[in-house]
Length: 154
Image (tube, rainbow, N blue to C red):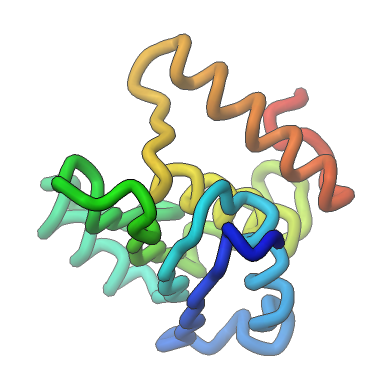
């Protein structure tokens, strides 16, 4: 991580199931790999109940999802050098289930979801085909640099 991509990172485990295997140093490495500018981020691992509540209250979708990104300075009149500020919420129940369904390790799937969330925090999206292609290509490149296989390959 270059000096221009200074990172202030908080990692929270209110759902402690992954705390021993998805350690703070791993999370920091995955975040730093996806960081394109300075950032102040919180990564929070939650259970299905908290994930569902957040998804329902903030997105109007009444189910737990794998990752939610709350970017706080998107669209604001922020100085160009202001750090990206976001909370990235990962639902342990969903990511463990998806990893099993996709025959991936929980660690690899978590790395992918963190990279995905960090890119969202920096303004990337997948609302249309072009945006999705750009974001997926970037995710694949970042994960490859981390030694993780393409999450979109069949």
